[in-house]
Amino acid sequence: MMLRMLASQLKNAPSLARGMAAGRVIVGKERSRPTSKAVMQLTESAAKRISELLAKRREHEPVTAVRVGIKSRGCNGLSYTMNYATEKQKLEEEVVQHGATVYVAPKALMHIIGTTMDYVEDDLASEFVFHNPNADASCGCGESFTVQQRTAAAAS
Image (tube, rainbow, N blue to C red):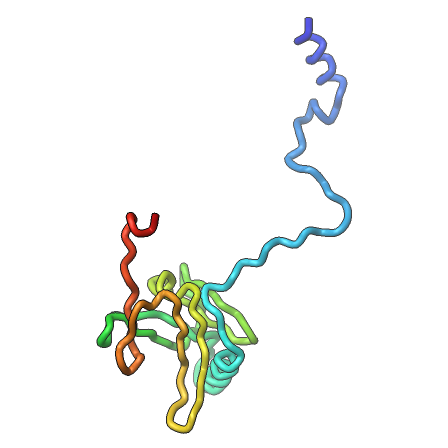
């Protein structure tokens, strides 16, 4: 008896007979979604220098960004690489800040997360500097670094 009454109510209710709604509608102010944090941060001076380098390189080829990666070399194991990029490759992360675009190579991703890229100039040198919270040690000249391998037991 109860089942027949429920079936007749469903038949007489057009919105329920077609199916339930997938979600609800909220009228009014839109809630903002949390923004995702970039893989690495660029300082204004780094972005300015990247933009300058790209502008100069565009005189010869159609580059769109700088690609940052890592390579096994140096006294301490890993070293940063920077190259011009004409397009974003598969699985690369794109960082766009202060008008400059940087692609992060997939192999470098886990070593670069949280890094801030800066550009500094003084009387003796001008260079990009990577402030990497994942680096456990670096060599005396500062060109290579090492990242401690974390085991599953240490991570928990």
